[in-house]
Length: 327
Image 1 (cartoon, rainbow, N blue to C red):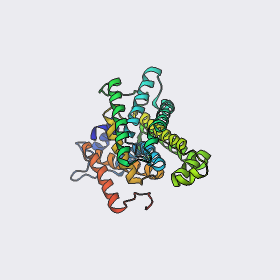
Image 2 (image 1 turned 180 degrees about the horizontal axis):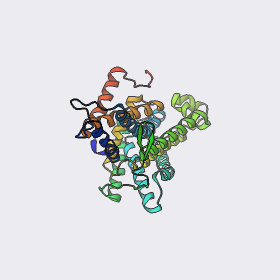
Image 3 (image 1 turned 90 degrees about the horizontal axis):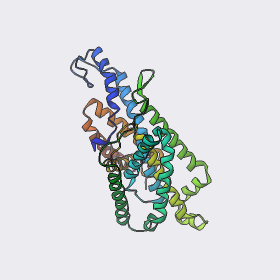
Image 4 (image 1 turned 60 degrees about the vertical axis):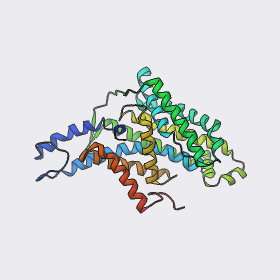
């Protein structure tokens, strides 16, 4: 799972920081402490800030999975495939219409929303009351169709989006932040805030929450459960598509990333708490920071090890997740 993580831009941060290591008395420019050398705290802060911004995008991706599970009670095993479809949507819009991935995100969200709504309304609704293994087989089949369709359309090679601010940095006090990560993180916060506001303040959002809390009671008072389930699935797919569009700023799009992002989203949702939207964001930030610190200070190939270590630690100490409720 190590090849799909956003390491393309991490090299920029490393190149910016290594001269500082050498000036600070580390002639090899190594990004980890050596005998007689103590790395300044500013470097740790820069690395952690980079991981936090990446983790916000991770958390946004996990929000889509958490929304669907929290309301429909169906685990979307095609979540990573929808996210990669969003990445390719951003790549196509950048190549043919010259749209920045940030501007392409609403278009990608609309397309993924329509696809998710149709999938839930036409297929998944029939499996909501069926055993979990049947839901797993169904969505695994959807995932297989999506990833092989993308392989047929785009091939196995990586595709990226070149943006004019790709190598720009922003200086905030002691922090030196990549412009791409800063913009992706800010966009993730805005989308997450809009999602929270929708569920908190709108009548439709409150109706969806009622379906999640008590489906039978919601049906008794006349709510269209099937329609609200389809709407929720569409929202979850749209959020996954937006996260995918933002990820094109950090990594190259490849169909092989889909299973990795599905697994990563599962880890984040479990760490944060199943069905908890704030927990998904918190879990994403925690995983993003831990992976970036591990990849920069140790080895990039050890990032996955730290993700699983955080997962195991949370399951041992708080099985319901950081912000999950006890059943």
